[in-house]
Image (cartoon, rainbow, N blue to C red; front, side):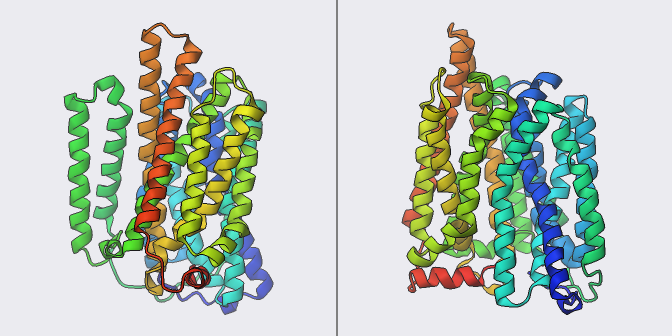
Length: 488
């Protein structure tokens, strides 16, 4: 990633750490938005009359624009100044949160969620660059990145709790409106604490064509999947959208192969570990995003838990995930290398999803939910760092920022497509059983079980890819340790 000329020596040690705290608060607000909404989904669906598949767009509108603009946001920061673009992205996200909170129609909420995704992508992409600028000493940078990683992993636990509390006490609108005071505070403090001069910036042009084609391709593909049950999988509408998505994807690859400053450098995928890690990231994210979404619906619509109880139900998994990401996963990589912790973590996550696939209509939390939650939290926490390291292990240090952006984009794209597909499968199964005369809650639960089972298959496929295709460096575990220290 290109460094701007903002000199970290202009900021004394204490001020740098205050700046880190403020940046992490801004990142936390973005991370919260990926989980806080899940708990509120049933309330949103009931209030705005969403269908089961239509409700997916409250999540996917955010995921699609976030994934499509993540790499573009980092490039904007390189060209026009990191602080300036960070504050612009923060403003877009905060104002879009206001629009979400005031939404009284399905269309307004989905459009505002899409705008949130644009702002969130910019904030997420540039916050890492700003931290790299502020902390240049290896020891300080490692400590700062540990704090940043903990916030990213631990934000989920705060999100589910806060989402349950706000939805249960004040209503679903407040899961969005809570961003307003946080966004205003982060803006003011960043303006005061972050260096503002970016005097020498790299030459180049924005790859707008790449961003537009990849985002358009993904949106068409997800829309076709979400509406496949209603329009018919062999209908002209569905096939036409899938064909257009494929055409845009091919066009995107052609643009990236020819443009001087590509949004996604295709040369990275000639590296075996990079290509494998991104494929693993797509499959894993498909399973995990769908689990968050569908598990929240299962807990409320099948087991009858209130929103705050749902938030508390997710807490064990998120706390374990955060704890592993903060230190446990790194120690495993240092001892065993990258491949074994990654495969082991994915297998644990798959086992957790399989337990959810067996959860009955009359399930009890301690017996039928908690074991799966614990396995998923442990597995995801262990696998998170290894998959990022695998994506960057063979990449030159000058391209590590780009490699990180690519794997994050793969996560978001996999999550969006996986959630759309698994939610559609669940809906189709529920509708078929309902037509056959099954009780409503039985049909609903059977649909959720199918989605969890397919999610488990995705996690198992990811583990298989990692086990078979990841190349173990000659240095073994020591190579994993050196990569961990060198990775931004």
